[in-house]
Image (cartoon, rainbow, N blue to C red):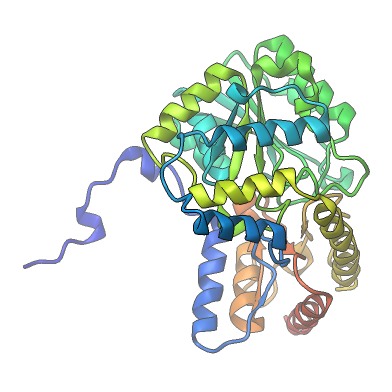
Length: 398
C-alpha cells in the first residue's frame, strides 16, 4: 500500500491560514534537546516557576476524594462563575453577573471562543504590535483581517487612543488590548485604557481586553477595563488563573462579557470541549475565594527577577532592552548582532542560541517584530545568571 503523504491530503483553507504557535515550537525544540541529554537554560516558557499554592492543590485532592468527577454545566459550575465575578468585583470594582461570565479550558480557549462569535469574514481587527502569538492566527482562523498597529520601542511600546483612531475604518469590528503585554511587558495606563475603550464605544467597536497578566503590574495598582461599567456592553474581558496562581497546566480561563456573547461562547464550547475539568473548577474556586497573599508574593519576586535580567541584558554589548512594567518577559533588541556569522534575523539568532549556546528564547517574528527575542524571567536568579553567561559568550564569539 502506498503511504499517504501530507501533500496528498487536502486540508481546509481555514487551517492553512494559520501557523503553529512560535512559543510552542520553541518548547518542543528545547524538549527534544533535553531528551538527548543536553542541558538547556529555558528562557522560552511562558509560565511561572512557582508551585501552585498548597490550598489550591488541597481543593483539587478533596474534589477527587469527594468524587466530584462528573460533567458540569458547559460554562462552569454556578459556584465557579460566581467566584469569578466576585473576585473581579473585589479587585477591580466591576459589576458582572453570573450570566455574564463563562469558564473555559484556559484563557486561550476563552479568546478563541470570543473571536469566533464576534468576528465575521472580512471584519478588521486592530492588533497592536508586538502582539501575543495567538491573537493574529485566531483572528485569521475566524476569517478576520488583522490591522497591525505599530508601537514605538523608544516610547516603551506605548499604545494610545490617538494611535488607534488613525487606523479605524468602516470595517473595524474589534480592538484587541493586552496589558500587561506578552511579549513586551508594556503596561497601558488606566487613562490610556479608558480613552481607547471610550473611543471604541463611540464608534460602535468591540474591545477585547486580554488581562491574563493583570495582577503582574509593576507600575502600581492593577487596573481592568472591566471597571469601566458604562462601556461594558461592547467589551469582553479575558482572564486566566494560569499566571496569577501558577496554574498553567490546570487550564482554567474565563471571560466576562454581555450575556448574549457569553451565551454564544457557551454554545460554541458545548460543541468542542464542553465543561472545564470538574476537579480544576473546585481548585479554581479555592484560588479565587482563598487567601490572596500568594499573588502579591509572586509579584514582588518577579520585580526582583525583572530588574536582575534587564541589568544582565543591558550589560551585553549592543543590546537594548526597555524596562518591562508587567508580566514576566523582557524583550531585548538584538539587531546589533545581525549580519554576523549567518545571523540575519531574530529567528536566526534564537535558533543559534538554542542549538549552540543551549539557551531557549522566542524570536520576535512570532510577535510581529523582526529585531527582538523574548526572554522569560520566570525562573531563579541562578538560572538567569547561567543563561545570561551563555548568551554573553555566544554573542562575543559571533
